[in-house]
Each structure stands twice: as C-alpha cells, then as structure tokens.
Image (tube, rainbow, N blue to C red; front, side, top):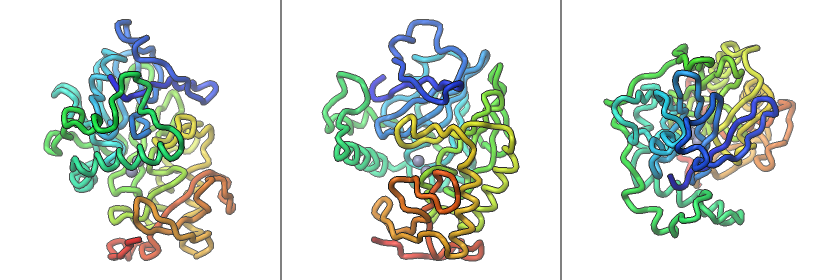
Length: 333
Ligand SMILES: [Zn+2]
Ligand SMILES: [Zn+2]
C-alpha cells in the first residue's frame, strides 16, 4: 500500500533498518519480532509479531488503508491496541474487518470523537507535509507513484474511523499472548486522560508513545494537571521498574523513536517537580498554534536541567495542581 514505510527493530543494536513490504508480500510474512510502520505524517505505529498472533499498536491518521498494509506483512490473527485517541494515532481504526479486535481506553472516547473529523485529520497531514517541505523533505513515503499533493485528499484515501460503540475497551493490566512474546498494558495517563503505554515482556521494550517523550503535550484541555501527570508517571515507573531496557516513541525520525535507555520516565517525574516549584526554564512556546510553556529549551531536546534525560514537557501554567485540572485557560497565541 502507498505511503507507509516499514522498519525492522533490532533489539541487539537498538536501531531500526528500513525494509520493503514488497520483499515480504507473497512470502509467509514477517518473522517474529518488532517492527515500525511510519505513515505519511511521520507518526510511527509498532507491530509485534509472535509465533501465534500479531499486535498492531496504533493505527495512524487513517490515511490509506493500514489494515491492507499489515496484511501484506503478516497473515497471523491480528489484534489492535491504540495508545490514545488523538488524530495521529487512532484514526485508521475503521479499516479493520469485524474479526479484528480494536481496543482503546474508553476514557479517550470523547477526544477520539473530536479528533475524528475529516477536516481535522486532513489539516494535520497538511501541516505535517508543510513542516517536512520546509525541512527539505518533500516526498511522501517511498512509493514512486505517490500522487501529487491534491490527490492525497481524495475521500477514498480517508476511511472513516471506527464508531466508539464498535471499539472494545483496553485498560492497565490487560495482556495478550502473541506466542513467544507477551504484551502488557501499563499506566500512561496525562497527555490524554485515557493514554496507555505497552510493555513487551520478553523483548523488554516499553512503548511509551506520547505518554512520555521528548515533547510531552500537557497543555491541552484534555490533558491532566502536572501534579496528576507526575502521579501517573510514578505509577508507570513502579509498574515497569527493571522490566525493560528500551523506550519506544511514536514521533520524529525512526531512530528518534528508539531511546536505548530508561531515563525518560524518571526524567518526566523530575521535570514535573521542577515545573511545580517554578524552577524549570518556563519558556513560552506555540505548539499547533496555541500557547504553552516549555520546561526546557525545546530544540534541540538536549537541554539538561538535572533530569539527565531527553524528556521535555509543554504545559499549561494554570493547571499545575490537581485541583486546577478543569481550569479554563484562554491559551490562544
Ligand atoms: Zn497525542
Ligand atoms: Zn502523537
């Protein structure tokens, strides 16, 4: 299928190598292991293939048909887990046939419905393509017959998301035995209220996704307060302590999405304390046309204010404490 790029995650070297779906299509499918699929908006979905089953983690923007693409890669029984209900992660949910379970935390149904609007999904791709063009990366994926930009917005390329009534729940503690690998759902709330993280027990990888990354968006109305986010990250740290070596993300280039250590979550907890005490950098920034404050210098994300990690948090200064979580803030630019 067009517009998707596949990488093989190498757990020894903690890097990813690009491979081509067409080399796999028609064979018996992907070997057991962990793979990354990057979509046109450069969001990464992760695919774990076991001896018995496959698990797709996230579904992207719903641009093109992610189900057909995964079926080029593996014919194993498939389950879909979605990290959270945002536009760039959940909207390929409508491409799966009824025998594929699609699971997401019900706490994210509201934000999922808001983000499922076609104009919002297409606007997201437009903004990401514009950002890539200004960075000198004009091509969309690797497909030589990828259309001109106007063709990208033909309705047929944008299947509707799955109605929430047809989605199954997903919550902390859920597990799935893939054969040779067990996936486990771990805490992750903060970025959204229903955000989750996924642990690969045998591979010792934690997909922290947007829950904890180099640019945690905590400024949105649907995010938790800094205080409650900190509590959530403490629960995640406790649940995963000593159980993983690699932290996997969903944004940036593929190798930006692989962090070969476990510093991100303790880094986030440390930054939350700094923010609450007013000891972070507190720099005004404008994510997605809104206003927020950044705990560190945002670019490059190597500013170390004692956290010893590449984590950064963008937050709403009126929502530091749990009691202020519903505070209205006119954070227009
Ligand atoms: Zn998100
Ligand atoms: Zn995201």
